[in-house]
Image (tube, rainbow, N blue to C red; front, side, top):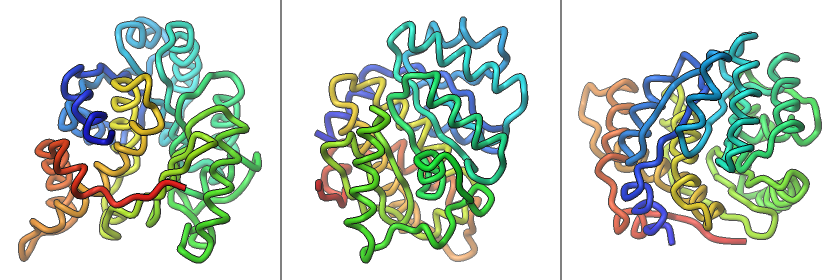
Length: 273
């Protein structure tokens, strides 16, 4: 199934509208191109409805909020809902400020979200209505570990049922659930945390995957997580002496570009609970 999800992206070349943050916008566009999708970036409120109308999916990332982009998020989201396009919310830094937290909660209330993807601290903030994060990173106290994995799986399943959205929690151990099943994914490298925006890149790619696989959105979301983690492993294996995090970022994008369905099936490390 993961192989099919990857191949459907390459076959259909889904056009994804991204309202994302200016820290990572270029990398998000490049990852979408690498995985087989096609990116459009627009957050101007007067522009977004037309743009999202010609796309297949919408990726909303709250990493660098301003009043114009917030209005654009709601207008694009409502237009995407009207057209039946999947909408993904990446609540970057929810819990770090009232503006981020309240914007994410309002988007959840007003939009039909196909997927909510974030780190464990961000997702807990949305589930509780308040919380704290370490800037845009997960608080170490919230980390999903083997010791608390059962509890984390139940939390993610419960939140997925409550929201009606696929919930994707990414970290050292990734969890992706639709409320009934939960993919527990162990691909990736800790060094990926030294690159700004791997989560933002994943949200863009995940939007392409769920857009290209409308009947298998849970599997598509899980496949995207496996692709990113496996690309992190493959990219790290090609690092040379003197290479650093800038090179690693490019190697990850290259690994996504070169990944086949067979590579994904062979390298994906997951179980379903």
